[in-house]
Image 1 (tube, rainbow, N blue to C red):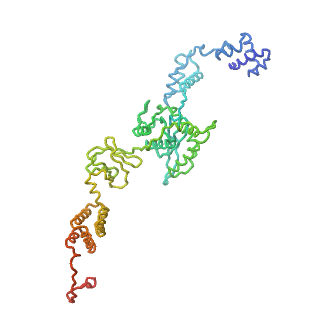
Image 2: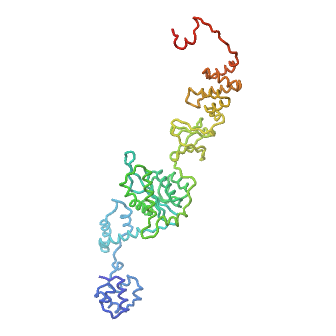
Image 3: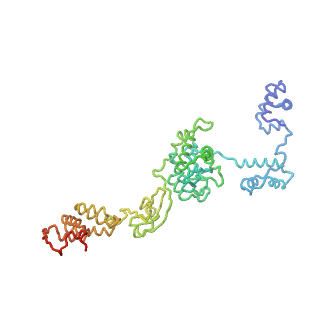
Length: 518
């Protein structure tokens, strides 16, 4: 058995420093048998090898000095396996398409059996080629440079309304401080990805230069060196003024920081949540937040600092500030032509736009904050809060023509307010006009109120007030009756005393009281 190069160097040093030592003493220092020490001592003495020379040469040359008959791989004239073939058939091909080691060896041996290695050495050399091919370059990131995101494979159970649902957990990791964030969502749609990412940036209190993910179809439309993102993903990056990047296809090591973060969150948090009963999504995220805070504050293994220590000391100040307005996810968009009513529909409700855009195309954009924006020529011309009223209408006064605004002011409140300016009876009579309708904006009743206003203008305020009082007393509320009263002015007529005539053919009030029917 050959001695190791370090043992040979130790033997040469012992022979030079203590030339008269026994074989057993020298073997103890070189950690070999005394027989091996004796044989190597003879080589040192025969070739007059100094320790300085032995220490200056390579291990291969040293072995050739002490073992001149040693046959190296370069001397045996054996063929090395074809590296390209090994990489193609064992690495690039996946699953059942891979060729077995036996088939590769037989293919290699059949080319020239006399120069071929045997199976064991062939597999050893081939595996070494694979290791060299899979060499990984460790990446280092500057503070605030990159945020890695991914979804965990392990889901979290939640029982809501009697039904069990599995929640997906989003994980984000800062490239420099390795600070973690996790957030549970009901799915892994584009909306879920971007909402969870928005929560992550809010948690870190800033934006990194790059956000790195894998090629999830919810985010990426077409992978590649420069990926083509989906529209909403691109809008997100533009809103936060950062770059988006993805891993190479089927190359998870490009997102190694994110994958490692998922592993930590899975084993430290998600595994322990499998036996906990959650009933609401906020309860799940509240629990995850507490556990994430603990992880970030715990000291790293083999270090005297935590992720939070590194983040607050070195990375937080390197993050770009968050935008003044939070990102809004676009849930729906549609192009319509504004009709003559200057109202556009969305989910059984109508919303107004400025009347000047009648006949022009507009784009309806509905966001996750329950707001609806209406744009023309890429400029917002109207904004409304989404209403749940079925077949309702939301109209802003500034969207109406001047005559429509005047017409819109004709409501029960406005007519009653006008009546109060004339007098108490006028206000009550105006209110009485709406007794037969529930619509305070009724056009039919409004026409009656306008007729009363015209009657007031013609007769004068004082006469109109007296006429209203008289009409209320007689319980006659129609505008025609009030106008007749203003002309007749019955309060100005002399009071007539009817004679007290007793006659059998005259029916008195007692008869009409209900007891005199024949």
